Amino acid sequence: MERKQSELCIEVLRRFHKANILNDFILIGSWCVYFYKEYFSDIPYIDLTTIKTRDLDFLIDNPARIKQEVDIPELLKDLGFIISFKDSNGYIKLDHPDLILEFLVPEKGKGRDKPYPLPKLGINATALRFLNFLSDNTIKVKVEDFSLTLPHPANFALHKLIIFQRRIREEKAIKDRNTAIEILRALLNKGEENMIREVFNSVPQKWQKKIIRGLEETKEKAILEILINTNT
Amino acid sequence: MKGVIKGALAEELANSSRMKKEYEKVLKKLPEGCLAVRKIRGHKYYYLVKRTDKKVKYIYKGKISDEERKKYEEAKMLRAKYRNLLSKVKKQIRFLRSSLRGKEAV
Image (cartoon, rainbow over all chains, first blue to last red; front, side):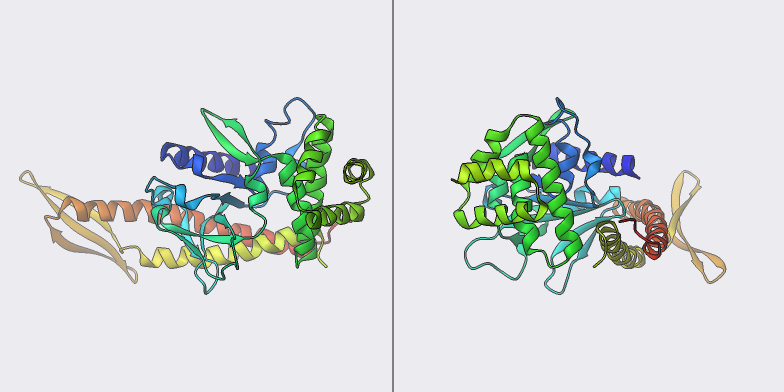
């Protein structure tokens, strides 16, 4: 299943690339950990240490910038993807036994409790808080003959450390926290302490406190020391 | 609290159960039957082959437009695809249910 799942994921990306929309998306969520293997290719890095679900989440940082008109459900129909609605509000997901595609946009202002329409893409998106933090600092990784945009691992990990404390389900919170620690450890092995510090310094103090609190729970001394020294 | 693995499996079970319903729904929505073609004196005549109860019925359609032919061909392809994926989802549900019954190592 693992190989088939990765192949399907690559096929989806390939089609998005051919349709000229891949550059409008940032891949976020647990699948980032899989694609970070290229970024961490110079150190021992095993993407399987974290649990990867079927959710393939795409962040659309600036929906107004989308120029191409592409009916995504139609584009993926022959692969077996079907539209399903998450709840009574009509949030769209594209379901396949191996992957579940979801689209997200950063929540602005007061927020909204209904889907964000994306008529050019034939779908809608869920607006969520804190997503700007992921799009502020991104990297590109090479996949076949195209490149895929991902949040910088430091942003990805620190974001997980903030949101795991907002999770209602404890097991999901633990999963987020463990993923964050694995990525931060990989960054330390790669010698990117400064990047962790830099990203940490770029967030508001309220968030910094949350990150520190999250790390204190994990008793992850090495990472904690780096951030506490930055903070003083 | 469930363990991390059981939590992830429970979420996947909910997803697969939703998917099963959705695949059943889209399968019902597809046009029924398959096209069969007979060539008589160089002309193509189409029949819609349908199963009603245990009998297979040939319904005469005659000459049909390319558009309609494509519609039935696409439905045939999608039906095969969705049936295959539905069977996969059912297997996933069985697997996930049995995994959730087991104990998780701490």
